[in-house]
Length: 144
Image (cartoon, rainbow, N blue to C red; front, side, top):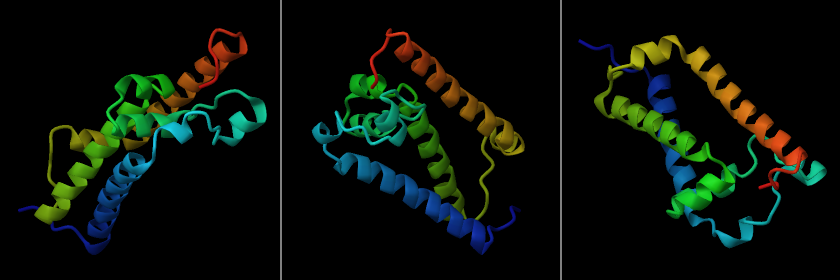
C-alpha cells in the first residue's frame, strides 16, 4: 500500500498544476506581434546583447500559437522547458488525483538525482546563452 500524500505535498502539487495551466493560458492569451520587437530583458536593454533567457517569453508565446519555427528562432530551449514543466505538472496531477505518489519509470532515479538534473539544466541554458552571446559579439548572429 502506498503512503498517502500529506497536506503540504498535495497543496504543492496543485500549485504546480495551477502554475503550468497559468503559464499556458498566459502565453496563449498574449498577442504575438507587440512582443516581437520589445526588449523586455534588462540585460538586453542595457547592453544590446541577448542573455541566456532572452527570447524565452516570445518563444513560449509562439509555441502556444503553434508557430514552431518562430519559437525555435526566439529560443531553441523553450519547447524542452514547456515539455518538462508539462510532464512534471502531469505527474503531480496524477499524484493528487490518486492521493499518493505514483511510481512511474524513472521517477525514483529523477528524485535521487534532482540536484544533478537541475545543475545540468542550468549548465545547458548558460552554455547556450554563452555561445549565443559569443556569436552575437563576433557579428555572426543578431540579437533575438
